[in-house]
Length: 313
Ligand SMILES: Cc1cc2nc3c(=O)[nH]c(=O)nc-3n(C[C@H](O)[C@H](O)[C@H](O)COP(=O)(O)OP(=O)(O)OC[C@H]3O[C@@H](n4cnc5c(N)ncnc54)[C@H](O)[C@@H]3O)c2cc1C
Ligand code: FES
Image (cartoon, rainbow, N blue to C red; front, side, top):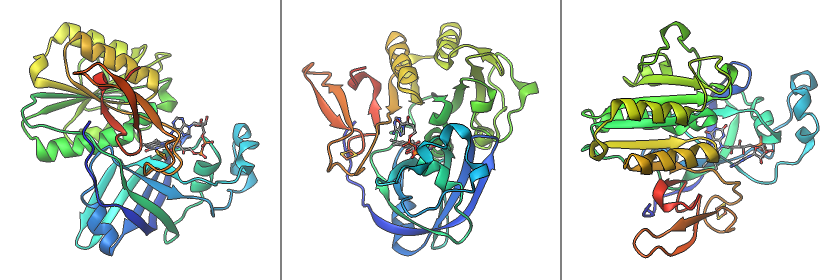
């Protein structure tokens, strides 16, 4: 994906909200004003920020899950990357919404953030999803914590491409790993339906899968996608796939997109240190489609969104 240079800088945000969604997830809202708001209001779905969480204290001992008690003591030396589920602006103020999963020392500390706390961030970083209004159908494939940038993308597609129908295929290991507020289990069927509020509010119907069958289709989200493409046969020239989730899921989405000749963009994850292209620590192996030469790109600077057929999986 061609790199675009976006304006970015270090800012201080103020926490306006930080509440749990189910057992594993939290919804964090950060307020920005002044020049930070000016810059972030133009951020695209798929772009991200790096948060400085180094000075946050741990939550009370009883709030630390047993499986995280050992790693919780680790110092937070590096900033942590997060994409956005939504960016709202009114007047001179911007609200960044982040959905995060508690799985290590930094995200454990994030739980303690409360309204009015200040947090230092860099961004917006990287390159976001490319959208085009000549598509009739956009298919979002969200594996577990891949959901955040795709929620943001659903909103962008509704606003900028009103002629494009958007459907989300949302999967996870089991029902408790689906990072959504309220899953309308009674409405889940083999046809896309308004079962996830986060997407329904953007007029996007969803199909759900879980590896263990605790909600929706039993199996991988990519199996569900393949079955659906086989049966519905959408016009490949008018369809596009956007995927975000575990690497194996995105690799499978890339293979399916190639089989059905549908273009596909993926938002990749790498461990990131600087987030700005300096440390060279987030390499992605890529292939030049014309020359077939391979090389490396940086996930933070050239991505995190790439065309799936330009990544060496
Ligand atoms: C571009 C980008 C956007 C992201 N957006 C979100 C988001 O919207 N919401 C969210 O919850 N998380 C997101 N992440 C992942 C998030 O940055 C990590 O979960 C977080 O840094 C974990 O910090 P920790 O100290 O709590 O856990 P750590 O101890 O740092 O990590 C816990 C476990 O997760 C693995 N892990 C951590 N970060 C990554 C990574 N980048 N790639 C692969 N494995 C990793 C570690 O290897 C370890 O096993 C994003 C990552 C990237 C690169
Ligand atoms: S995180 Fe440093 S170059 Fe990408």
